Every structure is written in C-alpha cells, then in structure tokens.
Length: 107
Image (cartoon, rainbow, N blue to C red; front, side, top):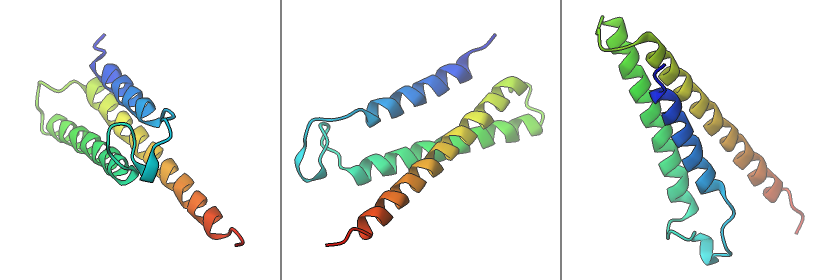
C-alpha cells in the first residue's frame, strides 16, 4: 500500500500542531520565530490553497487519462484538501466568535 498521501496528511497535521503549541509570553504579538499572527494565518491559508491546487491538478490528470495517476492517491489528495479546508473554516469560525466576544465586552 502506498502511504504517500497519509504521510503528507500526517506532516500537515504535525506542522499545524507545532504552530498551535503554547508559546512563551511574547510581547506585541510576536512568536518565538519572529513571525506575527497575521503571518502564521496567511501561511496556513497558503498551505490550504496549495493542497487544494495540488489535489485538483492530480484529479485533472486522472480525468485526462494520465496513466501515472493512481485513483487511490487522487482520492486521498482530494480528501486531504477537503479536510484542510474544513479545518480552516472552523478556525475562521472560532476567530469570528472570539472577535464578537471581545466586541461585546462592556467597558
């Protein structure tokens, strides 16, 4: 069994988990690596976009009859792209909820 797709998904999950780990108290929104929240968010969105583009390219090649594309690899790539998009939507929903909670705080 070819585990390339599973390894790729595990790699994405590990990198996301590494970014989500608690960091030491950093001032002015800077994290240990020197990037701020906006940069981390943009990089995550770019990764999701790249995953979707790669999966779509694989599906297009399969539909065009490319004999180098295996159906199970294409399906794994499409599911990985779908899961990463769903994860991004959930993060967005949490951010919107947090923003609304902050805006509703009585001063």
